[in-house]
Length: 237
Image (cartoon, rainbow, N blue to C red):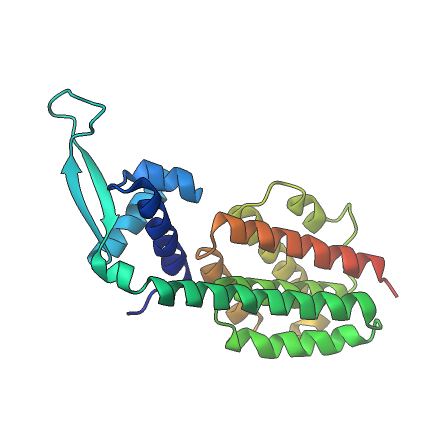
């Protein structure tokens, strides 16, 4: 069965929550535990229900004896339970993928010579089409954009517009805006338009992948982006 990274992560956490609660769950409980909006949690539960991985029914809460106040409750199906190990393995592999990219990039930017940034840029561009997890895609595209911005001599210091946007708490809106600003800077420079032939294509993939990220993934991406900016600003030569 084809599931997106976000669907895999959601289902895996739903299974864990259901085992703890030992009873069907209201979508608000799921939303609170997973750090999602109520409507997002409800929509995902309904989507997984259409895929045969979740069931629902209207029940009267034990704590509410009043008639006519039943609530929809959700629980994972036997089919979902049967693929738990596969989901856990997939999510762990996706997590390892972005960690490898993070370590590789930051190590080369921190300890490599200034001229090696061009090599890192070329290598990251080769990675993007092969990336599997949404977070790995976002990390690689962010790296590509920041290196391109640095290449065309835009300021990445604490007073730069990118740094100010990233000073806000982590959010998908903020990370989307940061990528858009960086892409705009690259496009504005006439010479930089030859740097990346597939810039628009990669940015679109970034936007799609960004929507797949969990709240924790967004925090990781936000922290990584700040780390890359900090390293590039310190190594001006």
